[in-house]
Image (cartoon, rainbow, N blue to C red; front, side, top):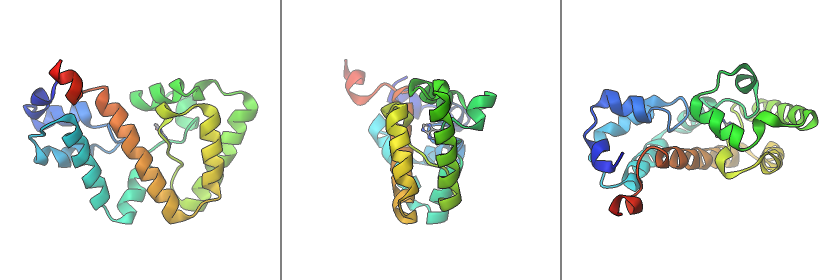
Length: 174
Ligand code: GUN
């Protein structure tokens, strides 16, 4: 799909197609529809990013809380969104060694206890080793820093998901 097709979508289709570019936050997609037409994929991405930045800190934490744990209950039960399932599988999180899986579970709980939201990282840009390392570091970090880091990761996840749906500005010209 190219950007002119995106711009021609009625909001129902727009939300159906792009509603999970930010995990389980279709309200963000529904809100940015008002900003069309987008001159490019980057402009759509920027509109989403600006919307997230405009949220109060509690709203940003809410966005983080819409994310499932990495290698958590939803993965075991098969109840992840398609996007999250594919990203976690690519990072090898569906096939952790038992010792890694229990370390991940322990650290995820510790992180949530400390901050009140889950650890979020762009799984597509990491593997299980780097995720575990960052999760352990995050557990020793501070609230404002982790909220900001988590939101920056949400934007990376959004970028990867958008690129999977819309031809980017360069390939568009080919
Ligand atoms: N990174 C990519 N997808 C996800 C997800 O669904 N949850 C978390 N916590 N991080 C992610």
